[in-house]
View 1 (cartoon, one colour):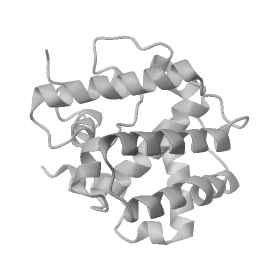
View 2: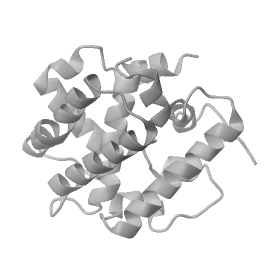
View 3: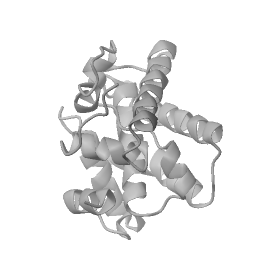
View 4: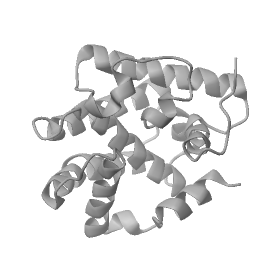
Length: 193
C-alpha cells in the first residue's frame, strides 16, 4: 500500500486545495479537531493559517533543510502556533505541535517536500502514537493539556528522537512519517527492540 495515497484518500485533500484560503482555513479547523476536544472558530483558524501555516508553506516551497535547520524551523513554527493558541486553548504546545506536524504530513502526502525534508519530518504526537511504546512520557500522555514550557519542549524533542530510533532500528519504512502513518492507521506494528 502507498502511504501517501492512503493518507490523501483518507483525508480527502487534493493537490491544489491549500491554494484556496477558504479550504485552508477549514483544513486548519479539521487539524485542530483531530484532538477530539471541541472545535475552533473560523476566525482563529484563519489567524493560524495566515500567521503561521501559510508562511510556513511558502518557506518550505523555497527551501531545503539540513537536519538541524529543519528542527530549528519546526521548533520556531511550533512556538509561533503556540503563541496564537495561548490564552485560547489549554495545552497550547500539544495542539501546536499536532497542527504543525499534521500540516507537514499533508505537504508530504501531496508530494510538496524534498526527499531530504521527508526524512526530517516530526511525527504528530498524540495518545495513539505514544501508546505504541512501552513508556510513559508525562505530561505528554495527556498531550491536549501540554502547555509550552522549556521542559515540555525538551520532552517533545526526546519523543521525536525516540520515534526516529525505532524507525532506524526497524528498517521497514521509508521515513518516520511513513511509519507514523501506518501506526496511526493501525496497519503496521511497531518494530520491537
